[in-house]
Length: 150
Image 1: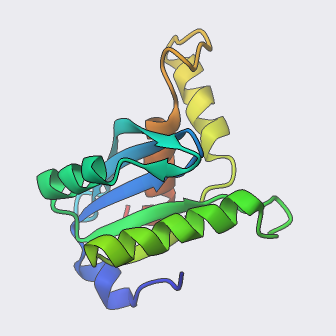
Image 2 (image 1 turned 60 degrees about the vertical axis):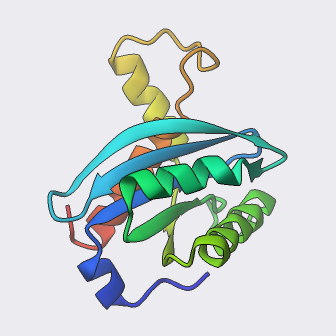
Image 3 (image 1 turned 90 degrees about the vertical axis):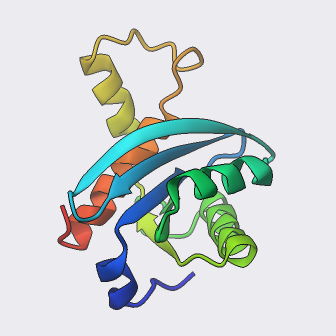
């Protein structure tokens, strides 16, 4: 999915970011003007398919101007099978809800989120405290930095 025009990113105030996964999809919310991002929730998915009504509820609650989806590229910049599915998810978000969607490089976002969790005292049981929403926060902060908006 192509990056939205710069004007869309420049006008966007409220952002929702997604860390796409086959079983869980992390969500974070952010504000472009303030340069902030915050982990929000983890959505359950079945083979990568979320509960679209739950996403619709989040969109209604937060009224985002732009959606950011993490693009899980391989370290050599090649497109992984998961990246293909994340891009399909991004196209479906746009198609279902009509909002602009941007892809953001998410390499090492889960690693960074787990490291941050450890620093905050979590013991590594990521089933009890999944890092997906924190990974979405990392993705969103990275996107803001790339846009020069943090």
